[in-house]
Structures are given as structure tokens and as C-alpha cells.
Length: 194
Image (cartoon, rainbow, N blue to C red; front, side):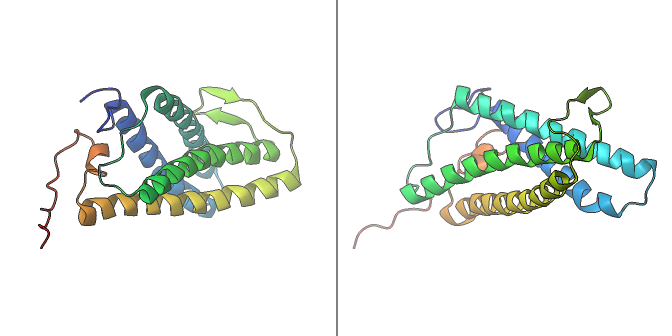
């Protein structure tokens, strides 16, 4: 499997970045939904620190993904895909990239406005990007939560579209992003004109 994207499939670098980002999103989402209910103590502090570290990792991965996509391009649309579906797919990808950048940045603002230090897995501190500010903290918290639900919705729609292509259009949209390379999909036979 090639490292770089080809005209008909995603390369191994794009696949690795895609699936790693997804796994981190599921993990950070679960942490975000459950950490507020943890009892106060070292465990809760460690969970919040982990959540923040994963968020910074996602921000970094998304920046790498965007740079790689600009460098490696993207596969051509599957032959026969209607133009409107191509446009929706492009807009969805653009929306996902925007949300994947905005989500951790809003968390960084939220953390900075709280006045807490931001460490990456305890290895080094990142600078605050705003001063301590209660009102900004509240606003950033609302935005962070809204972005979570927006990205969750878009990821579900993105996955549903991939499964729709796989199950009903019987094309390689899903298969060419799966690890292990693209496998051929039998196209349904065309019916002859009567």
C-alpha cells in the first residue's frame, strides 16, 4: 500500500491519521461526558489532564492531516458519483477539519480563562492563550460543548454516508479508507435497455 494517496485510494499515512483521529475522538468524547461526574480528588484531576492532553494531540494531528492532504491530495471521486454528492462530501470534510481545529482551540481558551496550567501528558506546559476571565470561561465552555455535539453529528453523518455507499451504491468509498488497502467491490450488473 502506498504511503501517499493515489487517484483511486487513500494512502497509508492518510488512513493512519484518519483512524487515529477517530479513536482519539471517541476516547476524548467519552472522557468529556463522564469526567464531570467523578468525585473530586487526584483521579478527577488526572482525568481532566488526560482529556486536555488528548485534545492537544488531536489539534496537532489535524494540523498534520491538513498539511498532508495539501501535499498528497485526495483520491478522485468514485466513478458515477453524482456531482451533488461530491460537493456534500467536500463540504463535510471541510466542516470536519474546521470543527477538529475549533474544538481543541475552544478547550485551550476554556482552560486558559480558568487560570489552570495546560500540560501535554506532563511533559511540558503550553502557554495560556488568554488571561483568567470568568465570563470568557463560561462562554468558552458553552462553545466547547456545542462544538462537541456538532462534531458528533457530522461524524455520524459522515460514517452513515460511507455505509450508504458501501451497502446501497456498492462502491469503494468505504473500502478505500479501511486499513489494509482497497479491495475490489463488485458493481451491480447494468440492466440492458429494453
